[in-house]
Length: 240
Image (cartoon, rainbow, N blue to C red; front, side, top):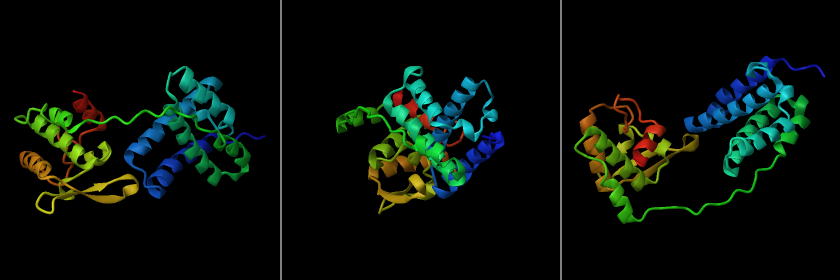
């Protein structure tokens, strides 16, 4: 069989992220980032085995044997749980479905990959905080400081709305209505929007935060340097 040109694979990787995930599916930045990380790990695996750079891989290298070996590597060498293995597989399957739409000449090669099943993962019980425990958490930020004011408003906003962290960090002042009827417009997966009511306590905290910030049109929850707070920054303040 004549080997496919390596740049054909790279072209399809680019079209998968730019055309399919972002434009067709309307995937969030978090989803795009997660799929990109999973596929990067996968491409590095056969490249290392074949002693080639990732740019030297071709479509002929995307085979079920490599996928299964990579999934074993995820669990055995990287010590990841079945849930992480399944996430990596989901990212690979999504990409392979795109390959099948663009390259039917290798349909059987791709079908074998798509037939790989996810592993049964142990379901962890859902953990939650009682209201009194949430109140203890909300009492931790020092609201006399700008950072503490932001942290308090963010924690209260998350508790009030149940929004994903990426959704909360994407909220702008224009999405808020702080006067009755108090609510926020939240943009979820696939750019879908929903309206969520806000408690008076939440709007008071948000109003104080916006008054102290003084900038319009940017994210409500911002870092010390004025940029939108990152997921990592939000995780840090929550653990702190």
